[in-house]
Each structure stands twice: as C-alpha cells, then as structure tokens.
Length: 84
Image (cartoon, rainbow, N blue to C red; front, side):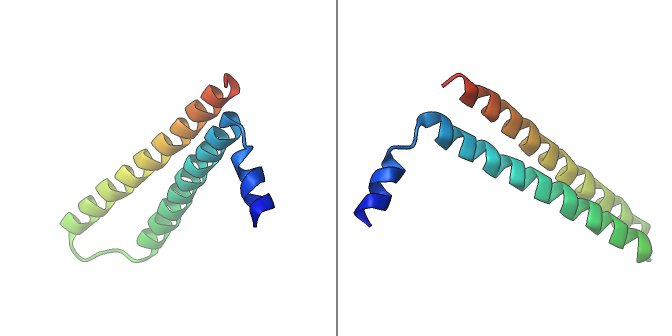
C-alpha cells in the first residue's frame, strides 16, 4: 500500500493534467456518441406532437454543443500540459 501511494505522489504535474484532458475527452466523446444514437432512435419513432419534436431537436443540439466543448477543452488542456 505504501509503495503504491509513494508512486502515486511521484506523478508529475503534466501527467495529472493529461489525465484531466483524457477525462474531458472521454466525456465529450461519450456525449456525442450517445446523442447520435438518441437522434437515430428518434428518427425511427416519430412523435405525435410537433412541439415535442422541436424541443427534442433543441436538446440534441445542446448535447452536441456540450460534447464539442468538452472535446475542445480536452484539446486545450492537453496542449497546456505539454508546457508543464
């Protein structure tokens, strides 16, 4: 246990920041893939209410935007970590 904790504390700042970038990248990619699957499912099951379709499309757009922002943030954090 002590050996593991000692090696964990020896991580450099760049490795920790790269781990954060990896986390943001995984979150962004998961959001984009899940939203794409949800969109495909919504196309096969049309809704009876047109207002609900507009709300669903806005929601898909929001999740696509958040996923893209997460991927961009991952890229920026990764670039930042190369300077550490």
